[in-house]
Image (cartoon, rainbow, N blue to C red):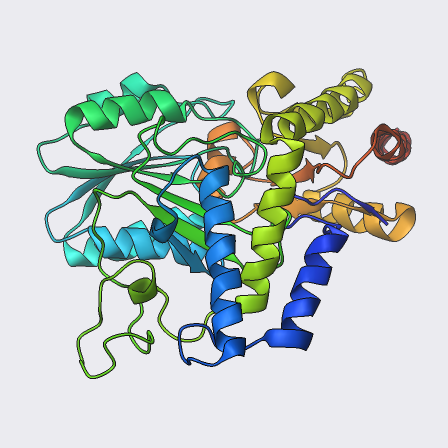
Length: 384
């Protein structure tokens, strides 16, 4: 199958990552931080190295402030619930994933208000828009690094400068950015960065993390065993152990550490540029197909995503036909981001997302374009 659903999870995975996970599980997989024997200690050391690898990718020396989670959704919830209190105000955008918008909606019951900035039809917001909506009680700005619907890259560094100037905490949803957009958490003034291990970092499913800046304190989302301060019934707030209650996914984290090193060796900018070139190549082939509509900005202003519709079909039909007839994997529907579809004008029908990764080739784009051409022509002929 031609896999073009990297926005959901990357595929394939680096072989070395699989080998690193297998080595852990078959040779030394003790419970890190829970025992003093050799297997536990070796696993703990490997998890520590993975933490350092991720921190290095994010351009920070504060590896202890990288908290491992099972996905970006958990990381975002950890940040939002760990910071916001009754009376706080949050600024976000209409391009956010439901992993931001749903927790914020739930937090309204705790007396937390929000302003959702309306992006333009390509998914862009301006740093000036955030400035306009700052209130005396604005506690947090949260914004996606890149839209999971259109791939639109947000001006995260400029927003970070404004937030720092106004003394507002700044949180970035890095689900679609980390691994293909070079993010420097310190230079960009990012206080909290939620990220997946399994997308742009090419790591295993069930891995992710939350970077919490050294000047920021949050409340733990989960409470339980930490391997430290076991006599106390109070959850410790030491980083990172106090925020990783329970047994961690050590094999997955070790695989993530390998994958983070792998991505860093290739170069995040190199991967981002390669994916941009693939999308540019695809959209050049699609632009003269009158029955195809694309959405979002030019390839140079987004990640490796093309969002499209084909006249005569809904998004789910296109997805099913591409899979069944042509062996091509894409994703149709609303992509867990209804407000984003409302923003760009696809609220009524959804759309098909093509998302490339570093293992895709131009020949994959050719196969997809040919399939879309056949489908579009068939629908046009049936309409006549």
